[in-house]
Image (cartoon, rainbow, N blue to C red):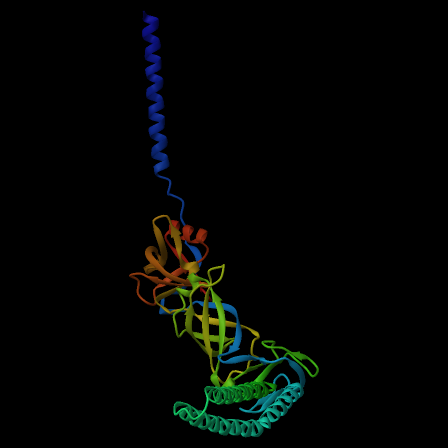
Amino acid sequence: MKTKILFIAIIVGLVLIGVTAIKKKKEEISKIPPPKIYPISVKWTTIKSGELQEEFNYIGTFQPYKHATISTKIYGTVLKVYKSEGDFFKKGELLAKIDDSEIKSNISALEEEKRAKENLIPGLRAELRAAEIALKNAKEEFNREKFLYEKGAVPKVAVEKVENQLAIAESKVESIKAKWKELKSAISSIEKKIEALKSQLKYTEIRALDDGVVSEVLAYEGSLATPGKPIIKVYYPKYGFKILINIPPEDAKEIPIDSPVFKGEKKIGKLVKYYPSANENFLYIAEIKVNKSEKIKPFENVSVKVLGKPYKGQIVPIYAILHLKNGDYVLSVEQNNKVKPVKIKVLKTVKDKAIISSNLQEGTKVIVGRESKLLEVMRRGSVVLSEAFDG
C-alpha cells in the first residue's frame, strides 16, 4: 500500500514538473519578436479614364458596286476585241465585234424573196380586176336570162347555162382573193424574219452602256461566241467600290454600323451593312463602303482592320487585375505604401488593357504584376514602388 502511494506521488510530481517546464517555455517564446515581413518591390501604374476599342482583322474582296459580264445573244465568230484589261471606255464605245456576214446574207436572201413576191402583186391585181368584171357581167347576164325565162321568152336551159357561168366567175374571184391573201401573208412573214435578223445585227456590236473600265477579257479574235458565253467583264468606277467580309456573329455584336475601317493605318471607309448568315459556317457578310479616292485593283483580296464599338471607363493593364473566386480585384497603393484590395468589375478587355468600373479615383496607383506576385503583395500588405509599368 505504501509502495502504491509512493508511485502515485512520483507520477504527480513528474506532471507538475512538466507543466511548469511548458509554461516557462511558452513565456520564453512569447518574448521572442515575430519575424519581420519586408515589403516587396513592385511595378505600378495609375488608373486612367478613357475608352478602348477592339480591333478586328479580316480579309475581304474589293469589288465595284456596279459591274457586268458582257456576252451576246447570237452565235458567231469574234472578229475583234477593241479593249484590253485595265482600259477605260466611254458610253457607246465599241468594245467587241461579232461576225455579221451570215446574218446579212440571210437578210439579203429574204429581201430578194420579198421582192419576187411583191412582183407578183401587179399581175394578181390585174387578174382580180378582170375576174371581178367578168363576175359583174355574169351577174347581169344571169339576171337578164332569168327575167326572159320568167316571161316565157327563153327556155330553162338558157338560164341554167348562165347560172353555171356565174358560179364559175364567183369561184374565180374567190380563188384570186385567196391567192392575194396568201401572198400578203407570205410577204408579212418575210418582213418579220427580216426585222428579226436586223435586230440580231445589233448584238454583233458590243457597245458600252456607260463609262467604265475593262476588268477581264474572256474572248479573242477567232473565238466562237455563243448566247450567254462571257466575252468581256467590265466595271463602272463612278458608282463606287465596296469590300465584302465574312464576320462571325460574336464579332458582329461588337461592330456597329458606321464603324471605321482601315487598310494598314489609313482609313479607307466604313462598315455600312450586314447581310444575314448565308453559308455553312453561319458567318455574316458585312459590306464596307470604300472611299472613292482609294486605288485598289477590283476583285482582289484585301486585308482590313475594323474598329469595334468604344467602351468608356477606367483603364488599367490586365496585369493589374487579380482574379479571385469571389470576384476581380486591383491592389491600390494607400498611405505609407500600404496595399488595399479593391473589388472591380471588368467591362471589356482589349489586348493588354481593360476597361473597369470601380470606386477608385482617376490617378490612383495600383500594383502591376503576375497573379502570383499580386497574391504575395496582398499577403504582405505593403510594397516598395520600384518603377512605373510601361504598357
